[in-house]
View 1 (tube, rainbow, N blue to C red):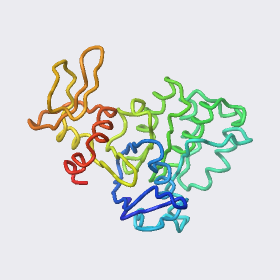
View 2 (cartoon, rainbow, N blue to C red):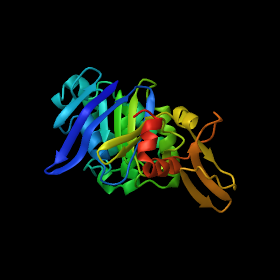
View 3 (cartoon, rainbow, N blue to C red):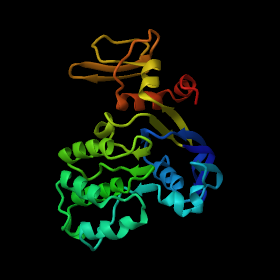
Length: 275
């Protein structure tokens, strides 16, 4: 389990994260949502140990990630938004660098890359942006890590490739893995991510499963305007409306509508979800 307690981090005089506390459990694919500049990438780099908390603590399965212990590094993978165009064939890169992860599986890498329709023998520095991103994703999944931190993994992917990513992230990760995916492209991943973390400027507004969200707020897709709607967005066929669930009826969570509702009613939502 990953435990964050009273975490703060600044860039000079600019405070990005302030007194952040949350927990991330294994066996789930977390969606980390937030506006630009709220610290999503900073949080990921803190979690994987690339940055040191200025206040507070991070505990990853009983260890401090900033100590960069080999045993923890072997169990985690951080995939940044921008990946390097390595001067090597994909298979050679994987064979050489996979040795850093004891559970790395070259056959698994080859299988995923084949499903991604990328050649093992293609040079990574000659790939398109989408091919390069898929090669790094395949490598990450072949490491068989326990904890994954992925920053905008669907950026640069075309529509078929996004579908391939959704399939791969559910098929090729362990049921024990904790996966945190930072994204602006919620529609790309809305059928994959659960629970949802919504990060605001110096705050965690929500950290809840889809079941918990559906139990507390209702998503209405009809045409009748609801006076108590926390958020309303008109569509060609009616409207998407979000309002407190007082009947216990289930509804399909719309992540974009949820995000907007949370941002328009921050204090109310934090109270509702006991943040």
